[in-house]
Length: 396
Image (cartoon, rainbow, N blue to C red; front, top):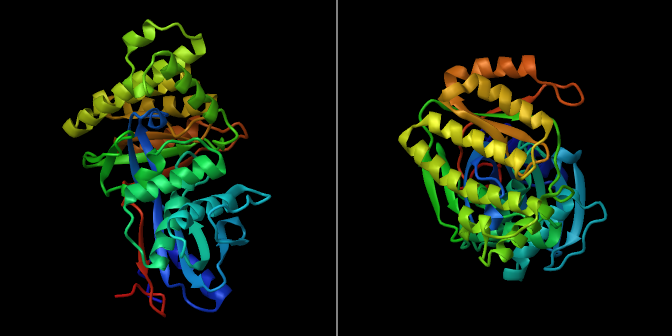
C-alpha cells in the first residue's frame, strides 16, 4: 500500500483488510465545515457562508452478496452494526452513529433498489459535537462510497446533499437545513461558499491570502436533536406564517415591526432577517479584502445569536471575546454552528495566530476546568471517492 493517503484514511483501509481479509475497492472522503457567518438562516431559505475544512470522514468500502451492511466505526472503539439494506430500516436501539449510517443509506436505496450490500469501515478527524458538521461529513462520505460501489456515479453534489439532509430530517430527527451537507459536498480549496439555501446556487468566495481559520472548541459538547434546535425552527416558521411569507428569507424588518408577535418569536425572526443581510455584506467584505468590516459583521452576528436567538453559552461568549480582543480590526470572531456549545471561529492574519493561542491558554477554561481545543484549518475540497486496486492503491 502506498502512502498516498493521510493516516486516517490508511487506518480505515488497514482495518478493513484486517476485518474482511481483503482490500476495500472504494475509498470515500467528505469534509466537515465551519460556518463563517449565517447561523440558522439555511432552513429559513436564506443565505450562508461556510467553508469546507481540511478534516474529513473516510469510508473504506467493498461489496457483499447478502444484501446487508456491516459498518465498523474505528472512532467508536471499532463498534459494529449489521443491518439489512432497505429503504425503511428500523432504528438501532442505541441510535447514535448507527442511525446516521442506516438513515443515510436508506435514502440512496429508495432511488437505487439494486444497491449492493456492503462492508464499511469508517474513520475520521472531524471533532464530534463541536458544531463542525461531523454528521454531514459522515453522510456525504457514505453516499459517495455507496454510489461508487454501485457503479452509478451520476448524482451531483447537490443531489447527494439533499439525500443527506433527508436522512437527518426524516430518520435521525433533526430538522436541519441544507448548509452543512452542501458545504461538505461542494467545498473548494481556499474558498468559502456563498449558498442560497432556496435555489441551492453556490458561489465560491476567495479567502484573503494569509488568513487563518482558527477554530476554538469550548469543550461544551452539543447535540442538535436533544437541544432547542427544532424549537427554534418552529418559532421561525410561526413568524413567517404571521407575516404571510413563505420563509423568513422573504421578510423585512419593516414587516416584522408591523406584525404582532410574542417577544420571543419576534426576536427569533429579527435574528434571521438581520443575519441574512450580514451574510451578503460579509461576502462583499471578503471579496474586497475589507477585514475590518467583516469583523464588525461577525461581532454583530454573535451578539444577535446571543441576545435574539439565544443559542450561545457563557463559555462560547468568553471564547469569542478573547479572540476578538486579539484580532482587533484585522478580522473577526463569532460562534459557529447550531449553538448550545461547540466552537468559535476566528478569521485572522496568520501572524496573529500565536497571540490568539496564548490568549486562549491564559484566559479560557471550560466548565470542567479544561483549556480550549484549538484547530487551525484551511478551506478544503468537497466530498470525493476513488476506486482502489488489490494493493490499496488508487486504481487507474
